[in-house]
Length: 121
Length: 319
Ligand SMILES: Cc1cc2nc3c(=O)[nH]c(=O)nc-3n(C[C@H](O)[C@H](O)[C@H](O)COP(=O)(O)OP(=O)(O)OC[C@H]3O[C@@H](n4cnc5c(N)ncnc54)[C@H](O)[C@@H]3O)c2cc1C
Image (cartoon, rainbow over all chains, first blue to last red; front, side, top):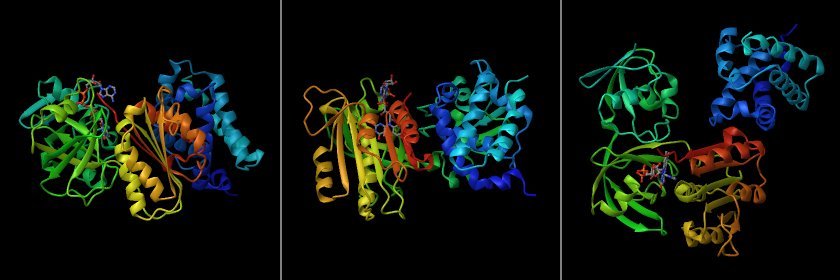
């Protein structure tokens, strides 16, 4: 049985999804203000790392990294509703790229498993 | 606490303090300008210690490998031994100056030794006393000089000096080239979008001429924005290029409608571009000039469908 990452299409799938996903994130009024860091190239690299992780791919993110990376956003009001929005946009992006509902659900579950770290709980 | 050694001095870097700020705090006045990792004026070399990768973003690999880095964005985790990057500075002379418009001065520099560069890249210009500012090349390599378009800023130290005080054949120093905003061969049919305000036209004009010299066939749209007609320059030259090369469209744009020539577009530059350009998916995009506008256009054009890797931007960050 191949891994989730392989079923999604590996590195190429991350490349295909990241621009679609990042565009949605930047245009969504619920969450775009968390991303107004002007350095878009650096943001894009972070999004790529995030997608690789939730696709079940090789990554070295730890729970501690997730906590550190989002701590400054908690001060700006980051909460469950924003995590929900990200997972929703992730699902929409994958749907547009023709990924099956079953795989999308697995990606969403992986993304959801970071929730407590992201929100420092 | 991390220590830096610079020439014969030793300093402790404070928490959250950059190497540049640490050196300045200790009363040593080294060249610097934007303090944001954009202009490269403060570049130094580390002979010992580990440079965080963020302090080398945007530098050529050959410079990185030799330990060059930007102290203004360097927050070190290890002790460092530093020297100036003097060996990279090439002596030059100010050989010609004339006004391209009421606010734009053309400066030609003759270099003591020729520096290879790509049209659109930028250089750091140093005055004898160490004052440093970045300027983009506006000409093609192969000329006998480096041409800069310098906007006259009220109270501007470097621009004012270049316009009023610098003498004939004034000695200056040049370091570079830097940046990745240039034309590359290999895709002659690709649509090109060039957009900038003010002296952002300098690199764009070089890139346009470079593309044409390399036989670029695909459509090239060049948008130049200014507050009003007085800010537009090189208008006849650009009109002539667009007549000579059918693939070139030149769109002069002004913000204020008063006294606008019917041939100009009126409005915000990003909106005018979005009205007239639509090949987002495939285009290679060059954006130069005012930092707020450049970063805004980068985001808007990405959202319009451009691939981020195809957007090359040089924001003229000032201090
Ligand atoms: C990568 C890069 C490329 C550049 N290329 C060019 C170029 O090709 N042509 C060019 O003309 N400039 C270019 N610049 C900008 C240039 O380096 C200087 O910042 C500019 O010439 C002002 O320097 P100055 O010493 O005359 O003014 P300063 O003495 O530095 O500034 C005087 C005052 O004016 C303010 N100020 C400076 N610039 C502006 C501005 N644009 N708008 C509003 N207020 C301002 C400053 O905050 C300060 O208060 C570039 C900058 C970068 C980072």
